[in-house]
Image (cartoon, rainbow, N blue to C red; front, side, top):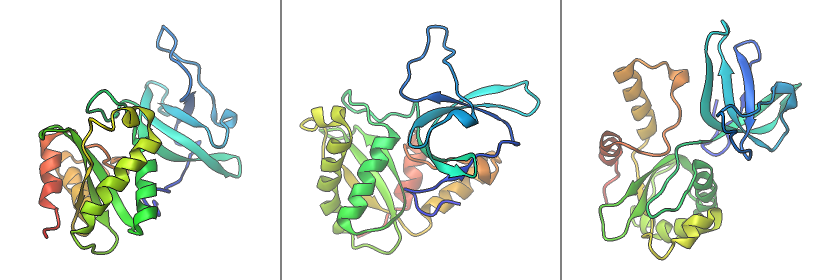
Length: 225
């Protein structure tokens, strides 16, 4: 179970399916079939894209999930989810991964002293300047005025986390921070389970909002004042 949005670790279950790992810093071959590593070949601290073959052997999935090997339980890798490979934020040509976002949010939490239960982001292009709107569910109630203080801090940390964001810092607006009601992310998860009939263990954390329906849901969870 996740202890905090920044430090959930998962132990791979060798008997559940067949795992392969594509080094995240490698390049795809022209045939689209990169070389893979097995469970006993991965290294602690390195990032890999997951490839999973089901028990029957009929289906092999390139998941698009990038994980980092955080350590080992006996000889079994423990991994933490980093980002979806194709889920990249961009407003003006910058390329900010979920990993960059999590790194910046970790520093925002440290500098502000506010603990986050969870968060997600929406690339808003409706104003004069495009900006990231970040929805945060704090562990404890936070005065609404604190939101204005956090935007410039997050802007600084995104510049530190990602060179392409820094190169566009004069064009991208200061991020907007929105505090959410308690259990907003649990309500979202339950709504997805009810709407699509997806089991709890198959729902990934929502980090980047990509549809108007998602944005409306979290706007409805906004703390007023």
